[in-house]
Image (cartoon, rainbow, N blue to C red; front, side):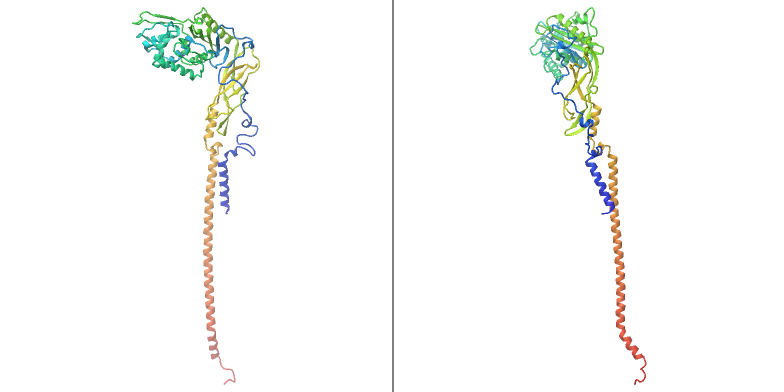
Length: 507
């Protein structure tokens, strides 16, 4: 084999090795391709607790006796105080027992209607016989009559300020075409929000055994409603005048019953709320207030007296604003390590987790915060992912469970890199192309050298044949000359003898 062919074979072998194992360039001798021993890729892993809560964004506060300030004693059978932005629970009592919500149901009804109308309250609505017939006996209403017309705005204010069940039915028909279709939409929204202990039977909150919720889930429902444009502003309404019409010529005056809005000194930072009552539900209330960049939701259910629902919500809101201080937390700041990213059996790298919030920490708590990651040990883009970060106060009190997600820019970079051909993973494309050209050149050079060698040998053979032919011709000529000499020799001797004179004395 010539030198050129040996060079071509060596370069081809090197190119094949690069194609089959491109990661070898990134790993030194004895090192794994994913990172050297002792690196984050080979050692760091998320901390997994032996046991702990999962699946909820609402943290379980400890027993009130363990809290120096302690939440207030309330008459409500169930209550909860929740941060609207994070879902952090600051105080609670029996928050997961099933309760009848009464007219606090209209929080969902109004939020769905606001989504439907998109802020346009001008449409005219006509009261149907079905909307009036569906009003339960003894329930609150503004005594709408079949065929009566009113604006969407009038119906909304009637449902909020007067808690009118007939107006709620009219709104349901406007938003979904029928009361039944609207109730189905209500339950779809509850399921979408993950509310497993909530079910609605009507848009008003009129008593039905199949119409129930919990303090926790009513707070979560309100938390979603606050994200609907215009909902928070609506809750702050105090009064509205509905003009007369041919069916009902007199004006209808509507005023809220929310004592935290109507008091001599309205509650500081109050956004608004919605009350409810039925003989089975007793008195219920949802109040929302905002101070210092934090919005709190207070829910009281099954209060024995009307005053208890307002006093209870005010006491809960006071507790949340007075006894907690805000602290900004992030997953990285709390020491949560990056999460491995895998696809099947292939490890693609690591991605930091994004979980950030401004949590409310009890003012009496001391010591640094700590955190634990709860979720899958690795992120697979082809599998569902549900991860959380549990944040603890210095005393070990669970403050909140924050939803955690892989940081998108880093994750997208890993996935894009993984989708490229192997030579692109290390930026080897120019090198591979150059190597390919070299190999092709070497092959062509080898073929040229082989052809030149063949031509040279053929020329040498032809020269040898010519030399041999000439030599054979000369030998043949010499041989012919020799034979001719041999044949002519005797005749010349006889002629010479005849021509020479006889010796003396001969006769």
